[in-house]
Amino acid sequence: MELEVKRDRLVLRARGNKWEWHIEPRYWRNPLIYVGILIIVPVVVYFVYRPLLPTIIEANLLATIAIPLALMTIGTGRMNFGPQFYIGIGGYTAALLSIHYHLNPGLTLIAAALGGLLFGFLMSPLAIISGGLYYSLLTLLFPLLFLELTLIFVDLFKGDTGLAGIAPLVSVGSFSLNLLAYTFITLIMMLFYLFIVDKILRSRYAVPMAAINDDEEVANGIGVNINKVKIISVAIPAMMIAIIGWFYAHYYGTFSGQTFLPLTFMLKIFMVTMIGGRTQIYGAIVGGYFIAFLELILIRTAGDMASLIFPIILLILLLVLPEGLFGLYRKRRYREYKPTLHVRR
Amino acid sequence: MAEILKVTDITKHFGGLTAVNGVSLSINEGETVGLMGPNGAGKTTLVNMICGSYSADSGKIEFMGKDITKLPPWKRCKLGISRTYQIPRPFPELTAMGSVVVSALHGKDRPNRSFEDAYTEATCYLEFVGLFSKRNILARDLTLFEMRGLELARALATGPKLIFVDEVMAGLNPGEAAKAVRLIERAKDQFGVTVLWIEHVMAVLMRAAQRVIVLHYGEKIAEGPPQEVADNPLVIESYLGK
Image 1 (cartoon, rainbow over the protein chains, first blue to last red):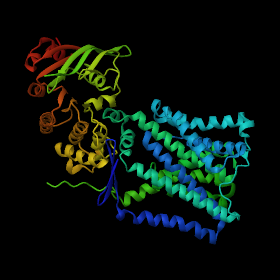
Image 2 (tube, rainbow over the protein chains, first blue to last red):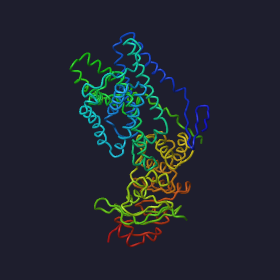
Image 3 (cartoon, chains in turn red, green):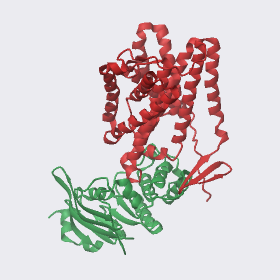
Image 4 (tube, rainbow over the protein chains, first blue to last red):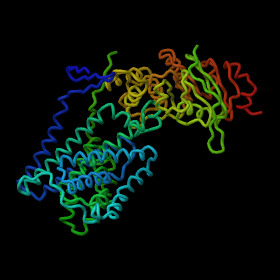
């Protein structure tokens, strides 16, 4: 293994492979500003109006689900309509281990991640054998099957009421401080996922994903092992989504399939990805905050009618903004982040 | 010249239709072989089987002495088989550069190849086909001729030994067609690839190919030097009828 530091990049050579990482401080300003805003907002909210903190947590979590889902969509070239299946896997794994074996959240995290990874691998052949609408319908089916299982095996999953008594993730004394801590944990999770997925999408590993997205038969013909790419593209995001299930379990202290597995929760995630912009990982954050706050405003102002008005507003937005909010921003302020190569003639 | 590709008694059925029926052929290294036949003769099906897009119902395909009949397309590509498509199939959402980078990264195994190296190599192939100035344009926005050039660049970037060129003249005007022919001839000279050229236009194969194979209703009806094939009564009959 050999590491070389150049003026603008790090070069790593190992076992016949070569990786290069650009170090470009000129691109750091905007991300740092946005991260700064995301850190400051919860602190301001904590001092000004604390009841908003759960909404920020919800927004962060919705974005955190949408980011790996975007990676899964890009890598398989297919839209998965059942990411909540992995939330269920992670949540129930954490809940069962915490309640029955009194494992601490650190250990349940590992178990939930491994559970998500395992089920991701098991589900990945779906992306190989089916495509388009069939894949979407199949993935839509699995969370509903899982929900049925939780209702059949009531002794294990406790049916509608769900599992209660899960150890909390943090306990810093007051309820408000706990909320603030949870807000920052979700923020860190979201930014960490964003960083990881962004790095993947800018790396050489994104190239075969993009090719599969466009035409997988041609990609296969020019040397891309499409099955391998698809399996990895399902399994890794599945693990990332399962970790969010783990968080939900330890955050609420209870976990019920009835909350996370039905279509209503999927609709929310779907709307986050559509409003933010399909496969736009930065758009996921915009979408997450938009949906969480829109839902809050509607519940406060429209009461029972909120459940009717919410999808109508979203449908209108989908018609008006087919590329999503972030897509609109990208269109107006397009910037090519990858430096263009110049060849001297 | 060493034999690079050997196809023995290859057959493909689609339901009740026999698209390719017991075709055998061989191609030597450095050769340009023409493959012709009327519409529906089974030319593209044959190429799809050699490239791995379709599996053969029976028969054997050997590439550089290795049996590749059961290998998936990506493994065949890594061995050195590449192709262009009759109807261009670019990656519409990728730029011209991005499309070629996919091949440069995933074609032939090259040790110590980084993402940046693949970009650099892709520029060479784009320059070769005259698309360097359009490297940052989305593939879907290119003209038909440019798409064909991009497909050639994408195929060459995999580092092939054998390349299948599928009806490159289709849809091009005479000027563009002449350029396309020159481009393939240059590719053969510069990169040392062997070419199997599927074409309807006899005049092109008469000039470019050393040998021509003719298919009709999925069966090989003639093989030989272009002039000999052009004079073959069976070939004339297959194109013009009795």
